[in-house]
Image 1 (cartoon, rainbow, N blue to C red):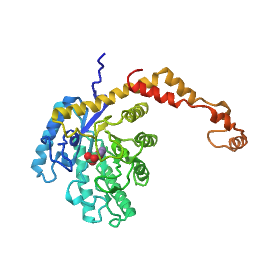
Image 2 (image 1 turned 60 degrees about the vertical axis):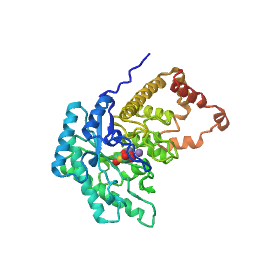
Image 3 (image 1 turned 90 degrees about the vertical axis):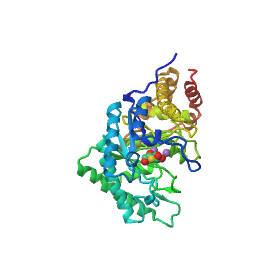
Image 4 (image 1 turned 90 degrees about the horizontal axis):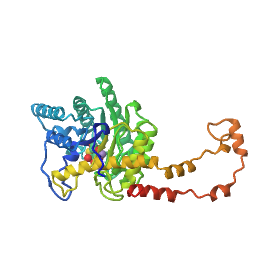
Length: 389
Ligand code: GLT
Ligand code: MN
Ligand code: MN
């Protein structure tokens, strides 16, 4: 049976201009695909069935564009959105490409660079809001060091806070309906980057003047680069209501920054991620922050984009299958069974519960003698993924 895994607007699948617009260059080789205009990329995304398109300020308007050039680009882009019905739900600032950011933006030791970065972000926020963005992402590509002789790390964190507080006030002052999402990465392009993981970001957010305006944008590849379980970081963000956006892609552990198609490397991890997002009814965009292999032409770019969305939808179906599989559910029920004897001793602290718990006699040997059936559970999960169940 051929199933229908067609993307629909309700799935909120988005791509950055820089993802499908990636020309395949890397540190060892030049472009293999011609550069396409933003509006052509919008038509390409419409063709594959995406819901939206995200952009950096300079993906849309080159850093040295004149105001009349900028006006024309904006008009063309808006026309492409209107023609296709695509939306632009997320925008961001490029604070890493231009040489002025060679030692960071908000964390630069130069006050001029720091303030230029804040000015550039305010303008990028205006542009994003003009195009309909509701989420503004911050990825500090150059916010780090190769040598800690150069920058004091505490000062760098404080400078980042000062910039974020300034920009939150800017959004409030303009009356924009916009939330911020901070994206962590452990390294690349810097030797080491500050606030290196989603967990670091979540802790940092609570130190801001307006933590309610700021959440996270975790990226699969970035947590994998740090050797972490991505779903666990996402779970922490979900738990505190901070999963404002997500960057889906794939990445082998221990490798360079690969930004592969979603599910390209580790389907099982991708499955648990999709299951988590669906079980907890994540409502934001699912942004594929990845690009096609260097071997591809633009037909291959479409294969890449369709593949990201299709894999997500297939895994979503597998998650439903897992959640309704009677054998799996019976095992889970058994594992999570309520223990009546524990009712009087656990839960919120009271002096009575504390006393009963202190006096309770646990049969340590009997408890630990019981097998947990995780081998069986995991094999059943694999069999769902392998399509034999
Ligand atoms: C860059 C980076 C991504 C970020 C983008 C947003 S740009 O491609 O590798 O992870 O999400 O600035
Ligand atoms: Mn990203
Ligand atoms: Mn990445």
